Image (cartoon, rainbow, N blue to C red; front, side, top):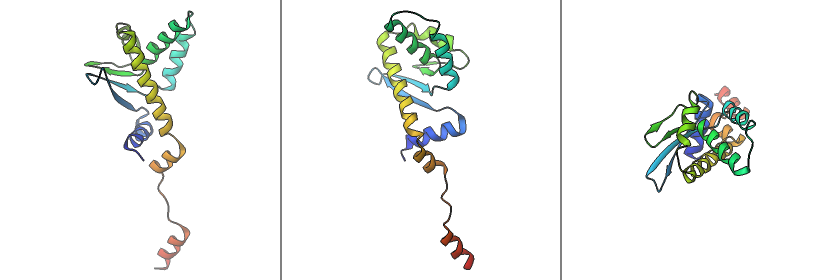
Length: 143
């Protein structure tokens, strides 16, 4: 199992969230995401149903709202998206659309990595201990 997959599984099992650092602008800027929780997703969907407009307007708003509940760090700025998603949203609205597009692409990729990591096989490999077989048990009892 890959080290990154094990980290995702351990983080989700023992803490409920997992994080990922990414590099932007040819590595000159770093950002950190946390996974999108059900509460975060429902909040974003609730806000989106109040919006109306052309598809590009809706997509950009969806990206900003999603990032506002998942972005923990951008450069030297640190956020608490669980407690202050409005603060994160206000900051994101000051960034270039190209940066927002790159951030949401990376966040979506991170969510895909999480979905791949939480397959039954990976969970079994990471958390299940293989018990002894009947033959091994009988052999140890006879000894």
